[in-house]
Image (cartoon, rainbow, N blue to C red):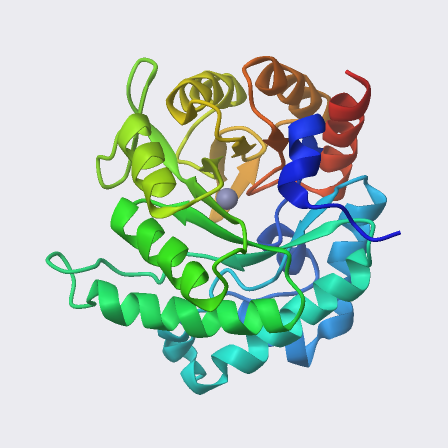
Length: 299
Ligand SMILES: [Zn+2]
């Protein structure tokens, strides 16, 4: 059986995305300062095992291990020239794991600095870096592109435009990281409102929009944010990938305390709020996503 078209399937039922990649890499011995994207060629079996665990949990969309895979981000590890190779390798691992039973999202994370005029990178240079990354992701078999953890709509737009340059038909998802700017008021770190974030992404051609990660949001905040995103998106499918609750510092470590049951309860509320794809971000595990998948399928 061939997998159906993602957007057509989404029109008929809500879908479950996977949870954190970084949290699982850390559990497998990833050290800060290492290049996570390099694991796609140095430790492919470990990356595959993470995908397998999320698929076994019932996730229907899995995300490539390429959050820092743009050439600009890779340049910090001296690996800029390997962007196409590393992204293609990552997408192949995810595609092999998913087969035709799940969709693969080619992950594009922030390049890690500010665009002009706050930083030195031009939108054109960023678009070119994203284009190389996305070429690799699609060559490796990704079904769609996920431009995630965005703070600046101009960066999100660069990601959407880059994807369209590579393949005018590939569906692009844009998700932003929001923080609470006042009671029930959410903005990105750059001060962008929910409405502006959504409208800029959709105007550029994103076919799905939403939120992932976020700063100090609890699960109730993600539900409220989901309502606001659904209102702003006006029919464009909304994706929300919450962290496992608000982070808490334990010594040097950031910990997330939400249980699988709490994540599942939040997933039900997110669906009621009009969200169509629910997954997880920092602190979430296959156990959390198994509870979310069950809630999305069976209510
Ligand atoms: Zn996160």
